[in-house]
Image (cartoon, rainbow, N blue to C red):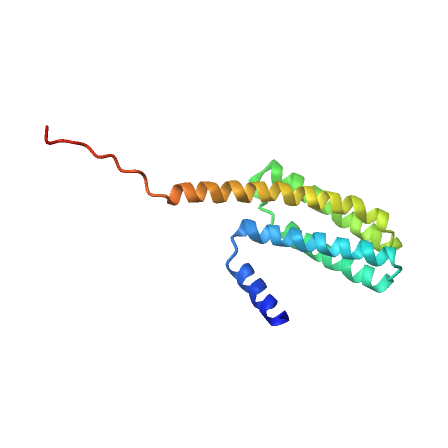
Length: 141
């Protein structure tokens, strides 16, 4: 079962568009922050730390892939990612699950916004790929 899941995941990643890859990164960050919250609530210090570090690594990846030539949106995302990373670092110092909950909220909001962008792009792509309806003209008179 685990091998089938890994194969599915590998195929999902290899066949994903850039937009879907970003969604997968958000999904991973959300998963790791959720895991960190649960571990912190259970007093599992090492597990909390490991999951926070995994979430941080994903945020660093998101940060590094920003196209800063894109303008204000990229600049704002840069600042937001930087803030989230800082929050994760602070939460990792204290292992306080309450410091992780706002991070989770930000990540979920960003994911939903990105999901809308991907859906819009897919819709536009499908429209562009559909053959145009042909018009039949009776030129025989």
